Image (tube, rainbow, N blue to C red; front, top):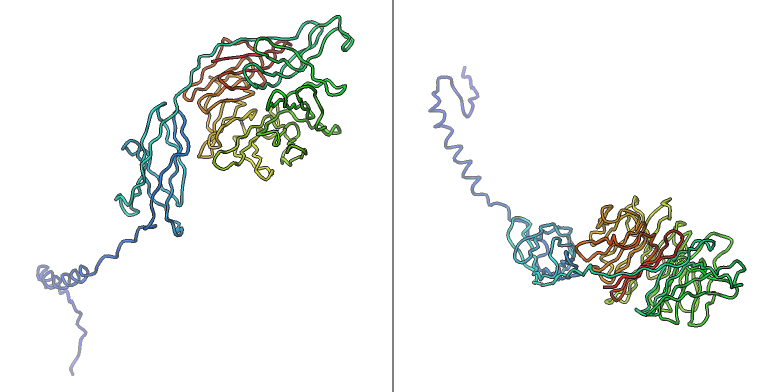
Length: 462
């Protein structure tokens, strides 16, 4: 009988030498290798956004930083891909990052004051480091620093025995020969029957170019003691004294009466024109005046609004207005409010552990605030500390500037500090007072407050 046995393709007999086994396997291995080598590699994935152009522009420059914007133009659609971008300054790569179209903004830091820099950017392949396209070239010059060299004078009012404590709360510089500091000043006047107690009660110290003149603000039978002031001209001045008052050059008039059944008050003022003024104060009070009517705005907070500042953007004509919110004793929430063009209220991120007492800016991409230290808000939408307790060892109450390289900060225990775009200088030689507010224009800074029951004015000139 014939028996069929299944023979394996490669029968590895123990009697077969290894060298002969390799000889038999070699043709098979060679064939498989040739078959594999004949397969073409898959084509590389195409570059995203193949028909676009990279565009670079400068948004803002200060003394040590530049804000730049990178835009991908000719963009038909968004694919969700990120693009490797390299930024070059004066021919040297300074930043590399993944860019999400269509545009992004970034800060370039570590620059030197008063120096011109040239920037370009280029896009790298998503597959390797090959350059895909390059942007236009732009040149910008950083701002120079400003001088810390100021002379100063101080003036005090009131505080005599038996007259009560005097203090000034706010100040407005109309021009170098017309400055109004407001608050309450009590001076002896034995011959006066003004209030039957032998002293006079003043609301304003006004500088006329040579001396300070004390004035009374009286609306009807009420003696008004403002805690906030905003002046458009010598004959158009607004006061916040719980309610809202106006000076027309001759008379003081009550324009808006607060709700006396509550503890709401208005304390500070900002306006871009006589037909657009904002008043803020206790219990989240915000009141807007349009030239004819006063309207309450819903602030979304019952906390004290300590300060308000705004600008009108030159390129859009739109206003950008912010308010600093925190309790004078530090209780409760602390935040920054934004009054939107439609008069609704939004917020900016704020480090909740820091007091927000005052705010100032001249461009919305760089915002300065003080309270505990001095903080700055930039394009990364984060607050960064510019000056801590070594520069401002006490609470800071007010911040005002001329440019972002020329800013004054004043506060408790004689804190008077100038920022020149690069460095801070603290003026330890000025009188040790509790400075409540300051105003700064035309190289003149005036701070007001009180010391030992006396109203104090500090005037500094460069």
